[in-house]
Length: 462
Ligand SMILES: *Cc1c(COP(=O)(O)O)cnc(C)c1O
Image 1: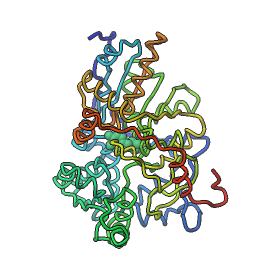
Image 2: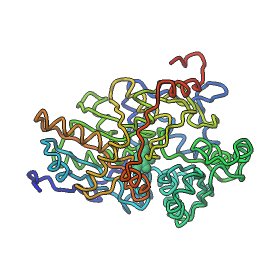
Image 3: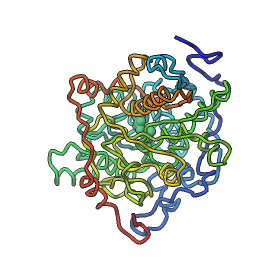
Image 4: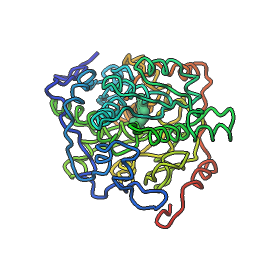
């Protein structure tokens, strides 16, 4: 393996170099992301309205468009030290395999039991719940990464954790479920008969295997009807992007130390939290006009919010009980064809990233599932890490960009986010190996059915 000058295979920061503040991109955005709206009044959600559902300090972070640096509380910083700093890896082996002059780096967030970056926000959200004196938190989980991360954080802080897990995943991913229970969470298959909304859905659709939207509705009901509980969400929200900025700040500190400047930054985008976190300090420089970077969001062709969605106010959940967010959306009723990247199946996108994309600060591309797994397999065989299917979307686009450099001879520096590991996704790998994976891409008519469900009101033309 060739190694360049003084650049190690893995760059680890010292504990003393770890970030002490999160960075809030909104402070440097000329056009701020649009506020959440109350679906009843169509007025911006107030602090008081939001604190019925979310913790007070988190609502304050959600609404704060102006503070650039938010100090990371000491207790969260000590928790981060259990699994951070995460390594920034130079993909020397992949570069050699591709015979590319491009220099490829990835920030690896899979080095914790939950297996993804989601723990960075889970610990922050659990911390503020504890600080408020709450008994516990409720949430939903689809594929299970978020529920696992939150269970770990709640176990550490001694908080009760109630997870509503989409029934089909509950049954198909028993191992994820047991990891959550090991950390002390109660895991309920959704829809369940433990909530009013669950009973209603079960009566209307007996035998349903559930959906994320339905699990959200149950988790919100439990949080708002039980004293001492609040609801927490693992992506999409401004506060989650704020917490995830720890990924980008560590990356930038490590790169600055070695004089590395990325030309292209690539990340997969489900609700936008890992990408928003990875790009944060780089986007800050771009917004302030200090430096330019090419930034690419990668999404599945089966759930193409950025590349084929509408920029409009829409519901974040299928149950249409949550506030309206202005974002690139496929419509809250859109159900993607069964793809195997559970974390990328959300119909909408972070309002911050949506505004940045709308204003031309970043690009987006979509990739097909089989080509994603080809990239995942090549990556596993060269770099050794078994990537999560979500992360493999970023790998696919990185490989494509590196191959373009091989054609043109350009020595570009590419940075991508490797968000997690794929040990619980072996059924998807099995389907790929057996040639049973499908690449269904929604037709314009499929998408139109989703767009028809976007609420219509003056000012929400799309
Ligand atoms: C949840 C998840 C994602 C997508 O979520 P974002 O909020 O878009 O970051 C990506 N990768 C992994 C491993 C995940 O668990």
